[in-house]
Length: 177
Image (tube, rainbow, N blue to C red):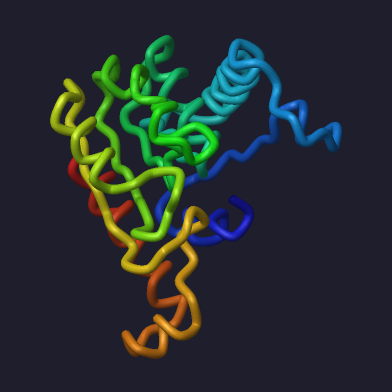
């Protein structure tokens, strides 16, 4: 997410935080209720600093937890950078329940080479969602939305160009809200 901070600051005010397990240098994430509580606390702290509309933007698990938080807290929108739809990359372990419960508008930014979120599975889930939902596809992007040098050269783009396209999609989504 650090790489995205500078980009996102071009669109609006950014407040970042780390979950306890990350601050403590542990590899195993905290249990879901603790992750949600940490995210809600960070949201409450951010709200003390501004009355601006709130868009929760998270990478991978951060996006997933942001979805859970939006079921409990009023936010204007969600942006998920590399949503981890398949637990451990296993399509039998879908993390789709929270998506089906959402009412908050959401933008998914997904790479075509992301094993944690096959686009066909995401497409099926999106059709069944109640919330307005949008998708920005990063051709050749992996779970971190990075595109190989070979594919960048073939497309005549740099990673910076690709990231600028993602930022444009995020800005357009926010404008729609």
